[in-house]
Length: 313
Ligand code: C2E
Ligand code: CA
Ligand code: CA
Image 1 (cartoon, rainbow, N blue to C red):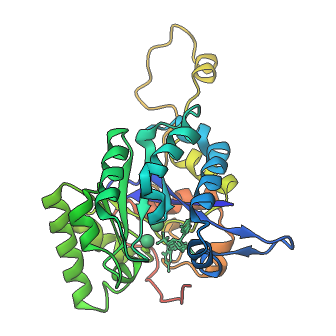
Image 2 (cartoon, protein in one colour):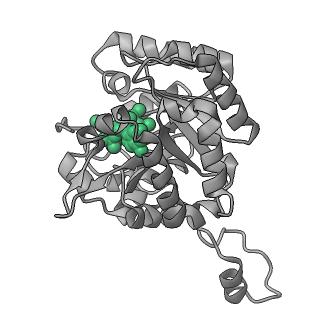
């Protein structure tokens, strides 16, 4: 089943994307995280089927909400073999064809977990996806495996900076050098950057000061089940339905100076939760509070309480 983690524009506080992260609910109700099964799924050739079934589920669960917000994208983790013979393009086109979600809202994230055999075939698939408006991202950039070759040879749209780099910003000087280098690379090649695994307000500030726009991590929200994610999306990015808006507004009324509903984009930082979430907190998200917390972090003010290091999973 899909869980959804928001990607936030740290310059504006708006949600710009949601990454789909698979979870496995066992018959006894226990939720298993990908570390327990994704490698097995990938090595036994089931990754393509897994992504297809996740895509269908995502379409059912959040397709309508995402379709109403064309500025929000959905990111899927896609195994390299799914790029063979443009399989992935056929799948996104077929699965989302009659849904409200546009192909321009698709991001396909690629991780170099195994050696790529057919780089030129993959490049053709990337170009074909881009031709339909989809974006392709290189995931986990900067960790041991991934992936300057990919970035230079595939012509991708986006780099996701690995969480190991982001999390050692405060402790390891070479992480800052890596980030500066990736910023230069992205700028020179016209690619977007997303920082992942952002856990502290200080990391948000550092990334924002360097001009990075998009970030994802426990400091904002953990991966959420669809119901919580949809509540968060509504709180951060409310959509005024045309019929409801007509009913609420007298026909002859002049337009109001204030938008009817806006996300609390500049809420008081005093409401800021501790800047690191423990796995236990991550398991019990509270969407109403999350929206205020994300707004507070985006208000560019220091947190109300000093950051305390709490071990995060
Ligand atoms: P990923 O694509 O790099 O996803 C980000 C991972 O970092 C997720 O772990 C997410 O829960 C975790 N994360 C997010 N924010 C933070 C943070 O602030 N701190 C820390 N420490 N971690 C954070 P998750 O959900 O356990 O997924 C692990 C990996 O499994 C993913 O890494 C991805 O490579 C793989 N995976 C997940 N879903 C799929 C899928 O549908 N298909 C395939 N092929 N792989 C998947
Ligand atoms: Ca990913
Ligand atoms: Ca990643």
